[in-house]
Image (cartoon, rainbow, N blue to C red; front, side, top):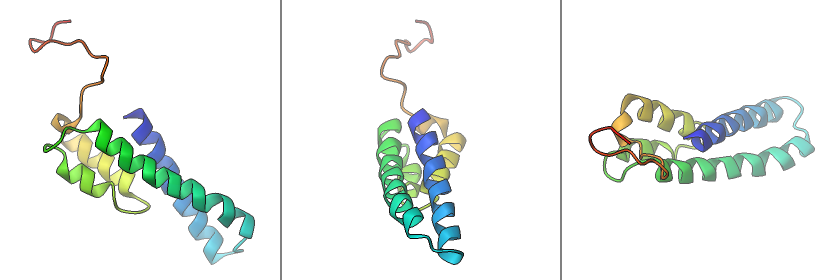
Length: 100
């Protein structure tokens, strides 16, 4: 989930920076750096959403992750409302009765 939060923030921030650049100075250096950063953050959001969620229970979060620019934020909101869709960390040794 930490990866998803970070990638969602980078995705949204890079979209904002690219949009401001487009409507103001249109500096080529910002576009050259911001485009790949935004694209990579988008792909990380989609991959992190799929790896952090349980198949079936999280179809809404997974679909929302594909929305360009704000998909990570939308997926995080969905997962906050439906915590049962979040997969337990791989190193978790919790038993069904809640004891370790």
